[in-house]
Image 1 (cartoon, rainbow, N blue to C red):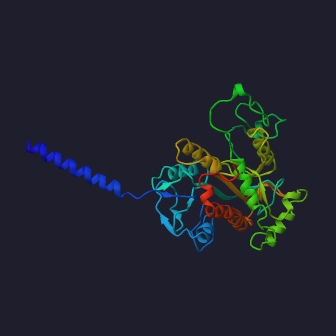
Image 2 (image 1 turned 180 degrees about the horizontal axis):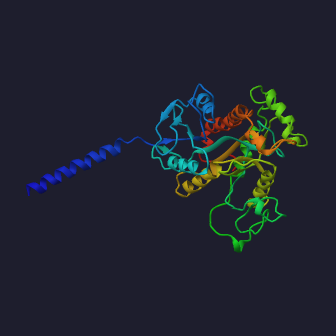
Amino acid sequence: MRKFAALLVSFSCLSLAGAAQTAAAPAPIPVKVVIVATFEQGADTGDKPGEFQFWVEREHLDRVLPFPGGVHPLRTNADGSILGMVSGMTIGPAAASIMALGLDPRFDLTHAYWLLAGIAGVDPDVASVGSAAWAKWVVTDIRQEIDPREAPKDWPYGIFAIGSTRAGAVPEPNRVWGSEPRSYPLNARLVDWAFNLTRDTPLAKVPVIDTPEVAAFRATYTGLPNAQKPPFVLIGDVLASDSYWHGTILRHWAEDWVRIHTHGQGRFTMTAMEDSGVAEALTRLDRMHRADFRRFLVLRTASNYCEQAPGHDAAESLTAPYIGGIPALEAAYRVGSPVVHTLIAHWDQYRDHIPGD
């Protein structure tokens, strides 16, 4: 009997201790905006910037939080309304980082807006280095491929969609295998709202973006008027691939690929890596009621062209030094930050009602 009483007392004490710990657990931080950068080089402040640094410095993301499930510590501003993260580069690491954040009990992300702001290669048919594009579609490159030297001679390239029988063809429904998404339509009304808010953001003639070196580089893209324009803000879609591809032939593939997998609704504009991984993770977190996919925005800014200038070859172009890196990083902050500031300034409205709805 005494042993039973002692066990009962011990159990009661453990229960009370557990209850006390539960009661003392801090409430999750109600995040309003998540900034997703894909890489940083060196420190987060004070040196050569990656995609994260301007956000950290200018939004005062001074609070550093450990993030074992990611690739880089998290940062927030003083009240936790803005959370910044580095996802890691390529599709898989980015998807894993977003899932880890979405499941982190320290944060309430149910009403958060997500802004993926990163640099990219731009289609010179569409825009110029330093330009900023809001995407309505994120397309991934799940595909079939044969070496182009073994492809039929009338194929434009050796890549073809799963379910199709030739390059450039639309998949046949009875031949498609696998259920993985090939494209992710974003919230078009939210994208339109973000574009209309930022479409007149000065990029041209801004010394740090429209530099003499960038202007001279644009001028080499003769016969491509959009590539020669000063940088501007537009709506344009993203093709995400773990392959860092380049060249005229593959640019034609990318244009066809986005057309095919958006059923003619999208237009290839930016080539990147991580976006489909982020979109897939947020889709799953949405189903778990941990995030709202309708609040996902993708902003890509052009650090380079995805094909060589006329008269040059692809290998030379691919291995040439980047001259548009800093301009693209600056454009990403200048175009993305007004959206962040507006959402927070009008949080009483945008917490429960998505802009544009």
